[in-house]
Image (tube, rainbow, N blue to C red; front, side):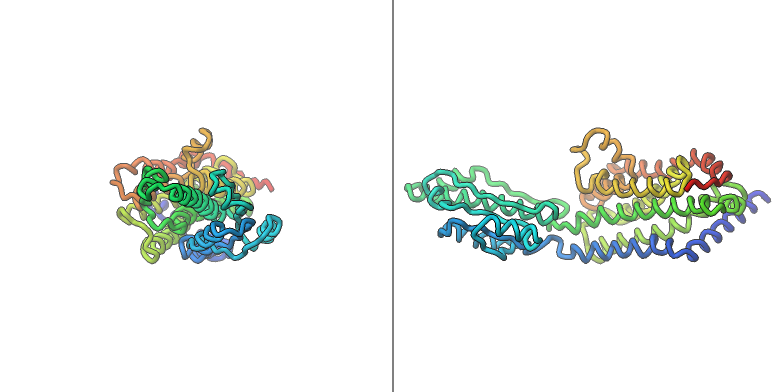
Length: 393
């Protein structure tokens, strides 16, 4: 009974000590509250329209025929394209793109209409600035679509001139009509896709850095033994007392993310919101455990922060946000599942986007729970490092 009371006293003392440190050092407030909220505001305002509209482009029309002018009008009618310049040379268009005034341009060669009418297959060239990935991708899609449509329009005119009926022409131009429907994100909004993936990734990065910093600072400032004495020399009580206040704050930030995504902005939520809340809690705890593993293996503030930053930044790509995991090399596919945020992302796809039964996401929840307890066997190693409290700059 006495031992139990001492443990409770040790835990409370550790909690009080950690809360004093959180409010006394501005770095904690900046990384735990200010930075995540700023990222949230930045991402929402950046993509509040869902997709970029009226991307500035140029047309280099060297044919000046009725067909090329009709092609230019049809391209300008697209929602995401704004034909701001009509030029006469490739050099002018290239200089505008290098200056950042346009994101792409399309060239219609001389003799376009004559070659198309004679069936000699004229070439349309288009260029995009891939330094800006999203605008370039959208322009590439629109340029390619318009090029295909222009080819079909020319063939249609040629066939009509030869006396072929309209119904026969359409059957030849498009023998199979595709009826496409975008599931989960019918608006094809980049805000729905990116914010649901990048915000948890950024939150994971902040959790890794703060957790490593809070443990590594004890070694750097030679206060690790004092920290352990406050926790009755129990590494479990010490870690619990240090991380529990951070868990509460980070989970509150995660709840704010979910409230903004699915409450205020009404992003797709086909399943139960409580499934995502539970997944967010597991993400926070699993990421903290991951940071403890880093510090247990390399108990150095410098090395720990470097490893945490590397893992956090690489998670934004290796976890499958920007590139599909099945298309990666096998070592990177395996590496993606060693990241907590990868399992959170798959839970989001299953529960929020697709709304499938919870049963089919069970292994991802199990993986996050295993992450949360994976650091426990390494705690004795971390305790030895804290007892030595040797700081390596």
